[in-house]
Length: 217
Image 1 (spheres, rainbow, N blue to C red):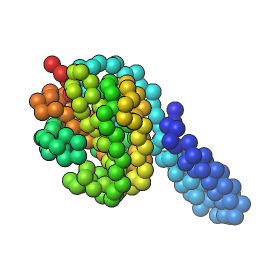
Image 2 (spheres, helix red, strand yellow; image 1 turned 180 degrees about the horizontal axis):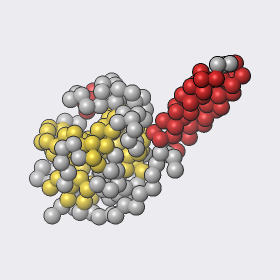
Image 3 (cartoon, rainbow, N blue to C red; image 1 turned 180 degrees about the vertical axis):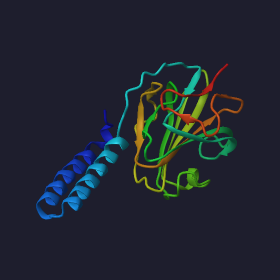
């Protein structure tokens, strides 16, 4: 299954693959070179397909848990000052996605969308300390009775050029469902209330919709 955001790109990549394979077959007379070009084009298409894959995942919905919004590696767990919405200290958990990870963003908890804003910006590498404040990004705040308000931020990386965010203020959203997409390497930051019990460790691999980021005891 592929994400709808990749439909146009997959179609273009598939068409180009057919064209280049046919051109190579017609104009390249050296067998090993012809085969190399055709395999390179096929490899490019496979990379595009794997990037836009959207695996179906059965999510166990639980209001007492925050689940990972994306696949990737946990690279930050620390108290920070969140200056856009809360304007106070929060517990930040960040997940870095490489180009080979699934890039679907999923809602980390049930609740009502209180805030949703897009920010144009730079394209620093996603692990850069200033990426959260200076890169192209979206900020979304969800509220529910158990955790109160949590914020997650989609951050574009050095290769990303488009963030897709489906969250709109006033929406009621369901944990684990499709919240958007980030094209190519990127990061998602989650800002939790201080004192929240974190359920992951640094460098742990997170699976979107499956890994439990935090729990309410």
